Length: 243
Image (cartoon, rainbow, N blue to C red):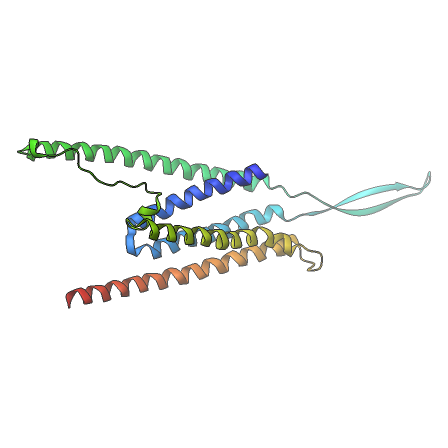
């Protein structure tokens, strides 16, 4: 379990890092609404998963007739209630198939994008060779400081100290906030199943659904607010530049 948890955390870290980097490069200063929409998808997905798993984790009660022979001619039938273990293989299989299809779709679009990028690069090289009249004046050894996309210098727009500070704050934020809702969401169901609450499995599952539904509603509100704030900020900047 420790190895599985470590692998899950490692893979999730890479996907979050790549997704955030991609959104920041695509949207720039307007990245707040897309980032909130990504987290909105996380909450909606959690609601969908809880609704999917709930019918399978609800334990059913079956009545079994047990015959108790007390004598030769006397028999009595007693109905005992037994609980059937929840079958979670089916929802796990459905989720695994959906994740596999999404991964295949990502690979398909990634390969298609690489192919289009190579074709555009070849066309640009041909156009440059046809237009260039003095290729001897081109200096191929231009010194440019290329930083890794994962370097603090890239995050800080060329300033290493500033990028390192932002990276440290982001890591701490992810550690505390991410660990908060991840831990709470995973242990909230077990907490609701304590004997003192006297809740059924179905009621605890509905509690999890309401938790993630409230999370999604908050992300929708943040998405709308960030969208209007970014647009208002851009209008103010454009007016200042005009003046």
